[in-house]
Amino acid sequence: MQKKLFIISMLILLCVTVFYFIPYQDEKVKREFDLFYSSQLSGKIIKIEEYSRGSNFILENNPNEYAFYPYTDKRLNNNQIFQYIAKPGDSVFKSAYSDTLFLIKGNKTYSYTFRKI
Figure 1 (cartoon, rainbow, N blue to C red):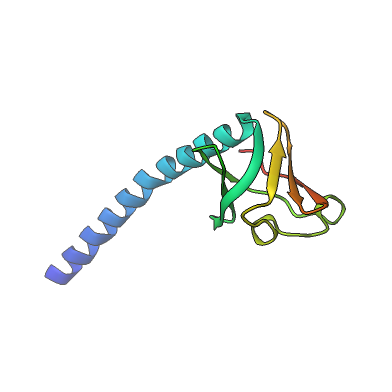
Figure 2 (cartoon, rainbow, N blue to C red; figure 1 turned 30 degrees about the horizontal axis):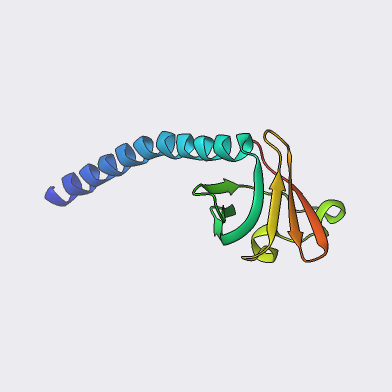
């Protein structure tokens, strides 16, 4: 009986925790997208990493960390996955509220559209 009560209590605690953090995570992703989408970006990447099926990067002379979910496309970016091709030292450009981010890598430019949240 004690074991059943413990298991039921743990399941209830787990459900409450999950239902509490889902809206928090959704709001966090929305805030991150709003920052990225509304920002004019121009500069060299100093840090890049994979982030929750998307990409996170920081530009030099800019304290913000930007997160976005780029699409891979044969025509726009030759099927090059952003977080695998972009490296520190490469440049990015995006106008505020634009639906396209440009990655400049050497003498090549790759275009990335992204999921809007």
